[in-house]
Structures are given as C-alpha cells and as structure tokens.
Image (tube, rainbow, N blue to C red; front, side, top):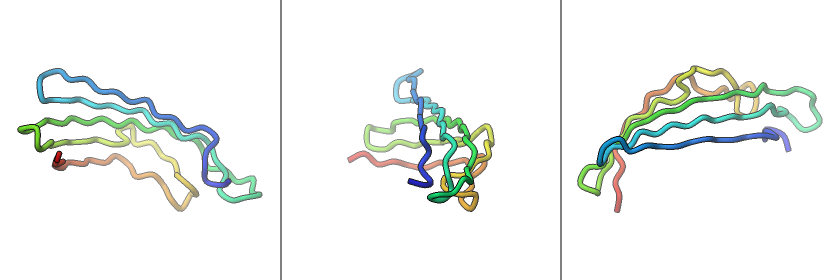
Length: 97
C-alpha cells in the first residue's frame, strides 16, 4: 500500500511537577515510504519532537499550550505534495464533561 511507511513509532510521556500542572513530550518517527503503487519513488524518513504544558482548572477545564515539530524537521506524510508543517504553536481550552 503506498503512502504508509513500513515503520512508524511514537514515544511519549508526561510528568506532573505540581498539582494541576502537566508537562508532555513526544518523539515521533515516520519511516521512508513509497509515493505510488509500483513506483520506486520514496519520501524520506523524518523525526519530529513535540512538547506541551497544560493546567487543570476546577476539574472542568484544561488550558494548554503546545509546541509541535520544535526541531523544524522537514518531511512529507504521503507524497512531496503533503509536506509536514514547520514549528507550530497551539493553545486552547479543553472542556471535560
């Protein structure tokens, strides 16, 4: 099947340094993969590193801030037309119900 790497892995973890705070990290690896069935063209493997912090507010809400691909790795998910984004900053609110 094209577009699907033979090897894909994620190592992630978190720590709770203080009550209601959580620091998260992830190392993502996507292996080399073919761009079309029957084609010898491949997209190179790449690694991304993501980090984030979140805080619980009254056990109902979480606010979070994430930095994704902090190493600014270059690569593509399926073909060269779908490049992974560079460094990304994400922030938001999660509601727990």
